[in-house]
Image (cartoon, rainbow, N blue to C red; front, side, top):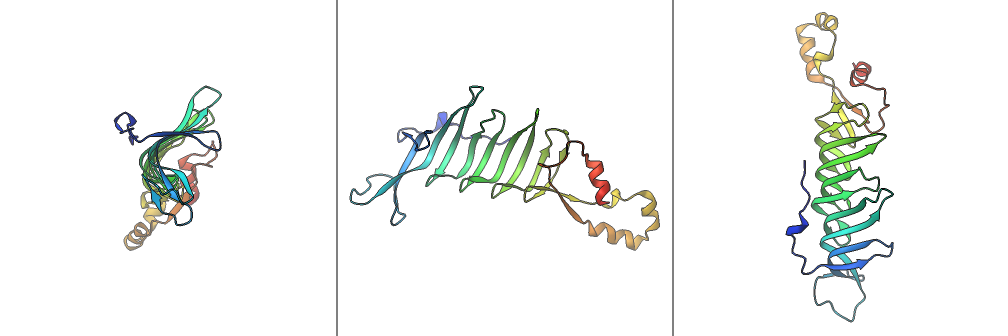
Length: 211
């Protein structure tokens, strides 16, 4: 499981506290952005240009409490007001869902650990992300069926490679050695949407459809 940045060890001498326009509260490092040129100042900003305060560096964004009085927040690194860097921790309003891992331009990127509430359970994925979606190597446990999927994912989908041993023994015997070798190399890939999988679906039922 990925580890979030331990803010107990972060130097807070430059931290500031702001209430944002949406009512949420930010506590962390800031910089000053020249809106006209895009230049960033972290200290001693010029007084003759229009500047915006932006979240930049280590910081914590407090979104408030949900109905169960659980605090929803993000802690991690920021780049010009965007969540950006490894070790971020995002706690969702439902009180169960959370993400620990990398961010890039405000979305999940790199390696991460994601828990998503679904019904009375929760999906759990550990592995790679790209542009906010499951990508690369990982492991996904379905929150309702309790099935595990992996290790390959692409564009938020599990990539199933149909191996030769999934073909029935009867069909195997009917193949010549050369044909069997060709079938083994082919290994057609099928994408499976795990987030929208019917609750009664099973991996065996899925494999039967693509065999």
